[in-house]
Image (cartoon, helix red, strand yellow):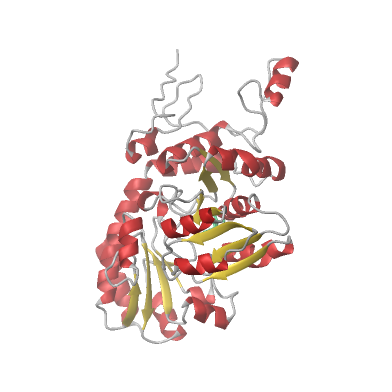
Length: 401
Ligand SMILES: *Cc1c(COP(=O)(O)O)cnc(C)c1O
């Protein structure tokens, strides 16, 4: 008999490290150690009657990989254990997760409040896309929870936040905003990409849904796109499931398998990258060509107390303003030999980006000013290389200015 043992499919008392290695594993009749890839679109039934029963929901089993597949289920179940969520649905990309999570909360005539400092795609969905479907939106400065309270209307159905924000690493008080949402019967959706599930647990802080771009730290090796939405059974198995089933923003089983394998090392990777990020932040803070460093794990962060209360680690993301403008920023980035110039993040490879001319160039100059995205701002995603080598690389880059 094959070994179908999987002690972790339901047990929530194991530590995150153990869940990340074993959680959600389903073994086939061959008893393989590493999770198999179920690279199939459909499933067969023993009889017409069995098909009828499965479609009616009277018997368990898969129907079609647009909405259920064993590899996708393994990814969802492993993430559920990590996040402490009742239910999860994986999607093709982080943007598919954000769009699905938000569209499931609203219909024409409703209203949404969001923090204004958002990942570019998220801001587009909230600011440009939702109004096309008759949903009004209000963007607020997320640093003060009172701004959310002031923006709430009778028809506000959801609040969307990201914390820490991209690229200036501002924080939003998840607990306070959850209370404001719930006082108005609205749902709080948190994009937890920058913090990662290792350092921040939005559901425990009162959020209703948490969304990830799995493309970032969860894969963590720059191979595949993916996303996931986690929350209560009620929210996930309702409209969110229906939207995925009927409109198809579904993840490929292959990509879900890549994410399952990525999760096995997530805790190790995020801890190591964070350790290095703290060292880099300290080095940059004392560098004469650096004007200002933004790092939630450093006492100089204007919301350090909030970071300490809602995050258990400072993250692998660091931003800095250097002395000089765009030309100096380009000189510094172009002088680096380990850091790659890219807009991705959470990768094993360290990455540097100039948000004003790349990820945030679509915004007007006024909006960039409002968000604090200056021409001398550089964003770093610290990877798994030696911290000493990364510091030497940055020292060289800054010397080129
Ligand atoms: C990358 C990212 C997304 C979008 O994810 P994709 O997988 O690229 O679609 C959403 N939010 C944040 C904070 C991100 O960094």
